[in-house]
Structure formats: structure tokens, C-alpha cells
Amino acid sequence: MKKTAFLFFISLSLSAFGQSVQEMVKDLDGDSVKDTVRIDSDSRIIVCMLSTQKFKKIKSGKIQKLNFGNTLVATKKGFEFWNDFDRSGFRCVFEYDPKAKKMQLVQMRRIDDILSYDYGEKAKGKSSINLLTNQYVGDFYKVNHGKLQKIPTIKAKMTFPKTYLETFTDSVCFDYEAKCLALYKKFEI
View 1 (cartoon, rainbow, N blue to C red):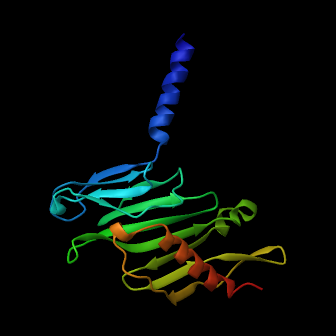
View 2 (cartoon, rainbow, N blue to C red; view 1 turned 90 degrees about the horizontal axis):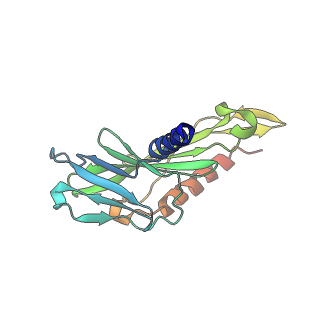
View 3 (spheres, one colour; view 1 turned 45 degrees about the vertical axis):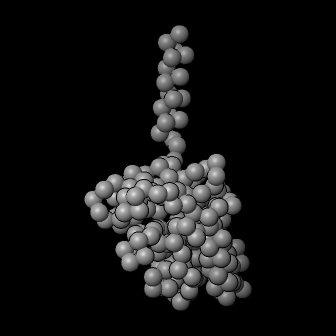
């Protein structure tokens, strides 16, 4: 009986601590009143309720490829929405725009670790774009004659339309991935 109770307790603990953060309560709009942002997995959207908007539900567009491992992470000025897949993932950073009085997508990061299965953690490719300055930076690897080779850091200007939470969908992430891959392919042999 003690063994069963112990296993139940361990299972419950792993379940509670192993889950991703689906809801976050913190001041997002800078008025010292806590706001709420959450992932609605059933509807496949992000929902945000800001005190400056009288806690009206602000809903993102549909996230077509919402993965099980999605999570919210607090940042100094807002939050990150992580949507990870088997070998890649996106990090979307939202901050409050006081002029528009909305949560704005200000940065995207992409991780591609397809090569790390064969070449280890050092082969993980990464890129980011600052959507306020349109500055893109990418660090990737390629395999040349069976050897891992880092390609030169890619720095480029990349523009996207201004995106607020209510117009956000994961299509912007996949557009970013396509533009990123087009830059990467310039270094393929």
C-alpha cells in the first residue's frame, strides 16, 4: 500500500511540475495592476486581459500548429510564447505598445536542431529578428563532406508587417522560417 501511495505521489508531482505554463499573471501594460495572458489550447489561441482595457479578452488569431510543448515565459517588459516542435521551435516576444495600447510582437527567434542529433548540441542553429528595427541575425551549421561546418553569421534586414496580439497567427512564424531558410540556402554547396 505504501508503495502504491508513493508511486501515486510521484506521478502527481511529475504531472504538476512537468506541465508547461499555460497562464501568466503579471503587469504587462505598466500600470502596476496585474494582467493575465493564457494559452487556450482547445481554441488554439492566446488570450490576454489587460487592466488598461478593463480586462476585455483580447484574442490572437488561430494558431494552426499549436504543439503540446507550448508555454508562456515572463520577460522584463512582457512575455514570450514558445511553440516547439520535434526539431525546431519558435519564440515570439510580446511587449505592450503604450501608443497603440496593445500587446505587440517585437521579436521572433527560431531554433533548428536537426543537425544536433548527429553532431551534438553545438550544431543547433539559431536565428532572431528584432521586429522594431528589422534586424535579423542567424547562426547556422552545415555538413560539408561529412564534417560539421559553421557558416558565417548571417546579418540582414528583414521586414514584417506590424503585428499585435489580435492579428497574430503562427503564419508569421512560418513566413519568418521561409525567409530564414532562403538566407541559409545561399551558403549551401
